[in-house]
Image 1 (tube, helix red, strand yellow):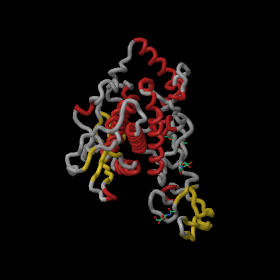
Image 2 (cartoon, rainbow, N blue to C red; image 1 turned 30 degrees about the horizontal axis):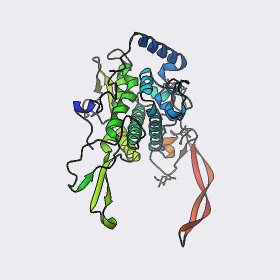
Image 3 (cartoon, protein in one colour; image 1 turned 30 degrees about the vertical axis):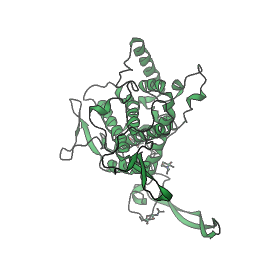
Image 4 (cartoon, rainbow, N blue to C red; image 1 turned 60 degrees about the horizontal axis):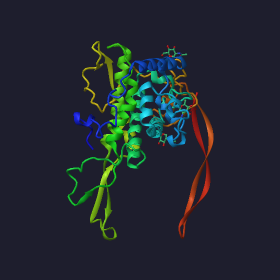
Length: 386
Ligand SMILES: *[C@@H]1O[C@H](CO)[C@@H](O)[C@H](O)[C@H]1NC(C)=O
Ligand SMILES: *[C@@H]1O[C@H](CO)[C@@H](O)[C@H](O)[C@H]1NC(C)=O
Ligand SMILES: *[C@@H]1O[C@H](CO)[C@@H](O)[C@H](O)[C@H]1NC(C)=O
């Protein structure tokens, strides 16, 4: 599917579904006071706005129907929301479960993609979720923002299709022009248009509320986050494709019904990992725009990841940067890649130990119909970084 472009797209298909960029959220005077109070209290609790909506992934969001009307409202109990996100939570409470699922899916994918690297996308036990490393505007941070925004588009688009949300349903994407004429366009598709728009409002709200001086480092970081959020959303949008099902007399497939379907999230993760490898180093100009550090490189598109800070080496544990270090990590003695002991352990060396692995083996097929296996144990050498 083509990525969203043009002004048409940005208008909500259902009038009034979204408040639009601040349309419905423009702070009023008492609102401003509340906003200020919310900001102050969150500053008091956590250093440098470390808290994030990602924490919705850690504590499952309860479904709104479990809340008794008049009891403590859901949105004030959820940790990590910015004031604008809290407002969206109030307007779209039933979406919050899926935002949590999307964040969780993004984090899991991040951990899969980085399982063999020094920084392995591990989470820490507070509402910042990834710890202080996200305060560095690195490539790794860029990937994390993109993959979690992608997770939200994915989860919301699917929830629409499954009829879980009252403000959206099946995709309304027009029939693709190249679909063979006798195939039906009409199955219930994943609603990526809605998923994209909602994720944009929700995920970006946090960045849009910040008001840093033009050309400041902080503003550069806001632009970086917005660009990477967008790249993540677009990956899901672009990779959604037509899926079809056969009908017809005894599987003749004379008739097909087709609909729009999300790509497997693993494929989205693979794609974003490629974008991570080719991410562009940027800096903020005095006019408040991001520009390439090396002007000989190609200008990043809206689908590319960007970063503003070099990555730390993630070798040693460092409380200031939030790096966990690689001590105790498993490494592969024979690999020359990032998972090899040399690189993973940053030259500190490694310890060897024997571990017993249990596997299924000597599997036999029995008529009919099950497979019986035995358990085999094997002693293997493993290595961990010093
Ligand atoms: C932690 O990282 C900071 C910033 O890179 C560095 O200045 C500091 O020396 C490091 N601390 C330790 C204990 O390695
Ligand atoms: C990721 O690295 C951290 C710190 O080295 C380690 O504690 C954690 O177990 C690792 N996670 C995985 C899934 O390997
Ligand atoms: C270790 O690396 C080698 C070489 O890349 C590879 O063939 C092997 O499968 C790896 N072992 C594990 C346990 O990942």
